[in-house]
Image (cartoon, rainbow, N blue to C red; front, top):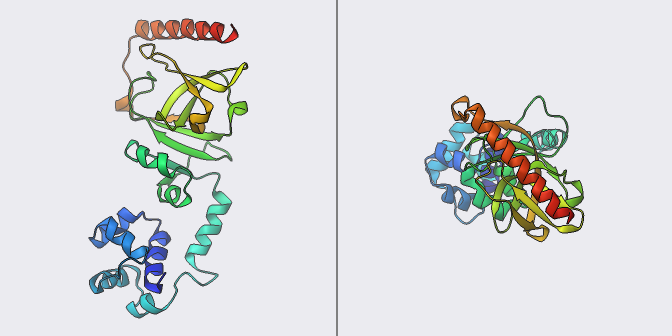
Length: 250
């Protein structure tokens, strides 16, 4: 990678900007910035002038000096800080990024591009947050953000708890998970809204499992249900779970 292309990427990451955010500030398309960073195109003079003014670094340094090579560089300090706090940073996957997440969930660069936040009440752990859509988990409303910690495999699943399940067939879903000790190759995904039927998923289709720790939603998003309707839902769900457990034991 040429020095100037490397420096553009370094300076962007120094600010913690995504490619889209940096491109917007420069008034260019994200694809063009990507071409610069990947050395598929040379930055135009006016772009270099903007970067020079934005970061208070000379154009000569942009073109000739590796700004991230020093051991005491900002990026190196940020990298060390992230290593120390990696288990506290929460990457956020919005609904609009769901399709990209299926392709990039195991790609460090893709994950690094996701916006992050922290929550003071969470301890150490590998956390991620997913925005959900739909009414299958009412009373949790569509648009809520589910904060989760990573679960590795079938053995760590806690029966009848809620999870964000990433599968190759269904994509990203938020469901209650039931498992059978007799069929470790399969789990059953259950909606809290009884209008949605449970369905089985083979473990070989599961790409990731994230157990929910917290739900974040706007007060305006909260469902306004009558007490009787909510009681009916809970009763129906209990009957549904009891029936499923009986089928699993049989």
